[in-house]
Amino acid sequence: MIVYLGPLVIGFILGFILGTRIKPVPESKLKFDKEVYAVVVIVGILIAYWQQPFPYYQDIPLASGFLAGIVGIILGKLTFGR
Amino acid sequence: MSPILKLFTFPISLIIILVGINTILGGHITPGGGFQGGAMIAGGIIFCIIVYGLKESPIKITHNFMGAIESAGALGYVFLGLSGLVFSGFFMYNLGTNIYHIVPPFIQNLYNYPDALHAGIIPYLNFVVGLKVLVGLSAVVIAFLESDKYLGDEEQNDNLFGEDEK
Image (cartoon, rainbow over all chains, first blue to last red; front, side):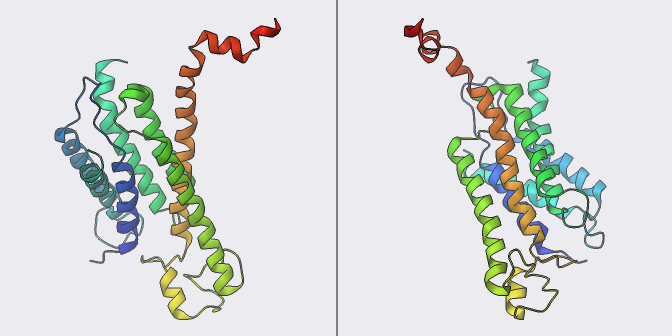
């Protein structure tokens, strides 16, 4: 199994940048807590599995950049999105 | 907007954003790229902003953020172009692949994208273009939605249209 660093790093950076923009909204009645992120992680892993090793077709059987984006969004939210 | 729509929009917009990121990452070997992926990410952001409204949207895109990301994207593009000019003598020369063997190997390794194809600077160009496009397209919608506060004030409108001259 080969894991390429490029899509992991760039996917993580893009996800992190966008994750920092997810802020809590005190005025809103809807609260998006950890359950929403759990749903996004589960659905994201399923999509990454269905995509298989996109876009290189020879590394691990998951879209690694997609997963890095999920991790980036959640870490961005946890660090700067509070 | 209906509560069901409000409940579903945020997670779906996150998935749309992730698909956009994936499109940017595969831009050098599959259909797609920086513009398309950036437009998909902007689509996710715009979806959230339209359903929740600008004030209640969980994805907050501020003017400072837009300025910073747009500038970073543009500067990154210019930097990659000028790097080619400095090291090889050609603007936007693909230093990572170095087809004509102009630059030394350590420069080639520096600009090489670590993946199966070694596409050089193309994925980096996709990345910076994606940053610019996602901010640019979101900014259009945000500017239209923010225009409400300028249209609401009748006095201001009268002043704008020169009431004294009537």
